[in-house]
Length: 383
Ligand code: 9MR
Image (tube, rainbow, N blue to C red; front, side, top):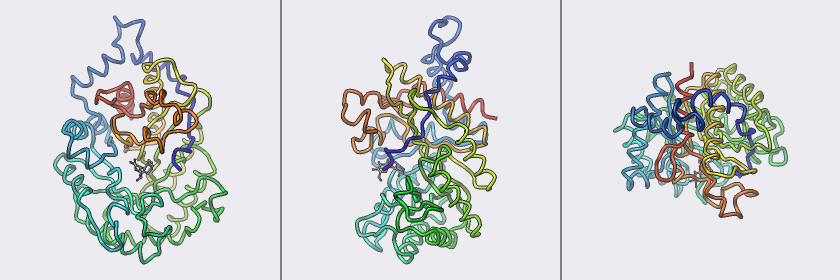
């Protein structure tokens, strides 16, 4: 389960002084330097959306979005259009949404997103053709090759001529979390999944539409771990098999805490190894939780989250990452606030702490938070 993931850092305090220097947290010197809040207002007033700051560096910023909210909430739609140059459908392209009954395809909600993208000049990241959790009840996991073939032809075929859909998460979360959940110690694939099946999935995808970028997407690979090692081996296997694989999606659902540290060196080595394999790393599902011990105010929490965003993105941009997608844009719509997903030990049984779950750049009222500034600054400082 994704909420078990732990790729965490100590809360970015090492960057605190750097951020102070940059005018990020000027409480004592408000007269000379703008406060974080004023900086946010400046960004908005100057109309510097993240998509433009990213574009100035040849990069893209975006978010996971939901068609149902898009269609009924104008403010949400406007915010997405203003800030994003790429979006990922939250669930609309998963197998359970596109082929709810065997052989019967439906694209209404995914097309709503594609049309929105077309109108606002936004790229769409196709998520995902193969995932053990986003599957209809009728489908076994892993599916047979025949089922995969029909599904991939149906879904990729529908978007073959799409001008906005530029990339696909061909497979999502195929690597197990630890050695007990796999029968394949080399690649660490989830039980029942064979490397040849994934290779064939990529081959089928290329035969349907090789004009898009193909990604292998996973979480828990943001450091040197058992899982990231297997993920890299699998990427290498696919490369060596000669199949088309353009990139690796590093989900980046991150928990940071002062109580445990982030494996900066390990993360850098994952990025380096992907670059060496000529498999482009992108950040596909970024959001940040601060885990216990919690600070004594929301203001401090927001600053810790902002510091963590900045620190993480600085590492990504130093490794030439060109695409950053957050898993949602506002704290009003985040999977993390769902009781099934929120981190158990600290939050699940403590509803009074849920207000500390503020993982995204905009708050519940669609106001930019210090995290927004941090992302903006990371793009501005990227080379
Ligand atoms: O955010 C998504 C949530 O709304 C859905 O209920 C869930 C099941 O489809 O999927 C969530 O998105 C997941 C993504 O597809 C893959 N990585 C983990 C994301 C958060 O669970």
